[in-house]
Image 1: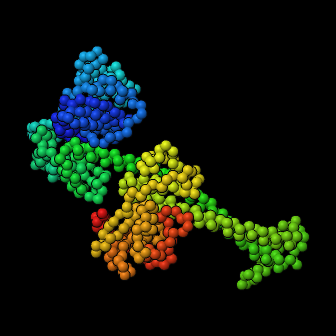
Image 2: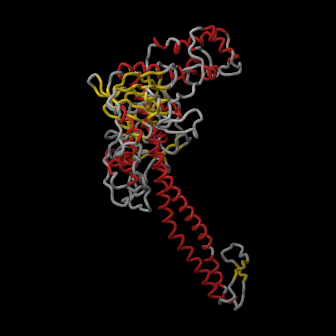
Image 3: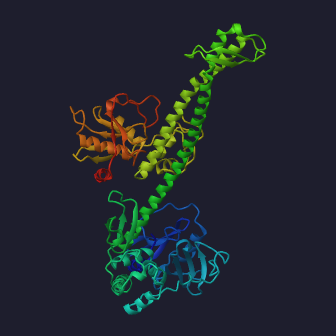
Length: 619
């Protein structure tokens, strides 16, 4: 979600006493559309972040430091020239417009004090950050430049006069309930109330409109025609709570997450608890600035991780597509060779009937002694060959087909093992819970030669989960070109509790699977895995003398094995289980790959309540 007008109003109100009077020590531009003002005031340093990107436009004090480019962009240099070492003397919002203006006082080139306005325009894809000479209203530069070719309303170019974004001509907050109702009733009766609030009244975003409707005890999809006078009165009271009484609104900022187990990927934030997010997990904070900072920092990290996952998935998918194509070629080759095996019988029949063959014959009909009814069989002959040579010709076709199958089947088996391994990598990528786990999958791709490690970006590339990504070229030896140093194991498998209190350990990637199975599990512990489907290793630690866990724990462990596999959501899934001592890793096998001969199996269809219960116990 983006900063709406009301949130912006309260954020500026909170920031004013912290920013006014501070000096700008440094100016940085770590990203294309993001500026950091390092400011100092009241004996402490602060970092004011201003982002004009289309997806995360905002301003707030931030504790996150980002790496800067070696050469500062032009806009950053312009800011340094005019406002570095300057003093922030004002921060304001005009009405409920989503434009924030910082006024900075600094000495110009002539040594005179001069004011500069830094306008942050929060307008989705049209957002911008523009530096303006306060006295002349002339643009000094914008983080996004454009001419009349892109906008008929104005140009954002150095030397042009600054023109504010076009007004939306919406109705300003109204303190008179009767007049407010009259305005509402002037709109078409078939329109939804929430749409009317957004389209015609200033300062209302879609999220706030839904909240106003819910606080009026109305259905979010209610249309005006279904609202009576009492409904409209309740609607106005909710409207007034946010917009008329905004100066005294008691703030209780919070960030929302899908569940209490996923506190790294926020869903939304609000200035007070919103009813529309009542089903989400809520984290309360004391500062609105901290709320905005936390939301966007975590959202940015989540988006970067999603991008890294996408990059890794593409690499694996490309290799998987190539392997699937090879498997198809081998299948086609084997199927064609299978037909050649039938030529052995033809050669034998010709050998048994050589006395019937005379030079120049094009075909011969013989009794098929391999047929229970001795049906006649006509065999095509080469008239230029003798009878024995015709028989040898069929034997050669048979021998070639037999040799082709013998040579192709091991290759196809290798390809199918690689296919299963690549599918396990896709599952590992999807199941990564944090940047460390993603970095482990990336390191595995390097170790297995699927990704080439770019020298010079070593540690950053190998542990960031995607930086410096480049597809490997045909090397499957596990060296990845130059052998990269094996990354330390940073993450540990995930631990859950069964309904009887037993510990269940689940690996989320091949590194975790290998670590828990070969290093940490005891020979007598129970090991589980979905049958013939890529998935996580699951371990149930057992005490000495205990051969199997109790049935509820076994079923819970099997449910987790299914949940963390490609069979998630399927029914009647077979799950193999055995003791760790029965697990073997073939020489040269890829990470996470094991074999076993003695095992038990069960069929299970986990219900969602069981999964939710188990996930809630994660430690």
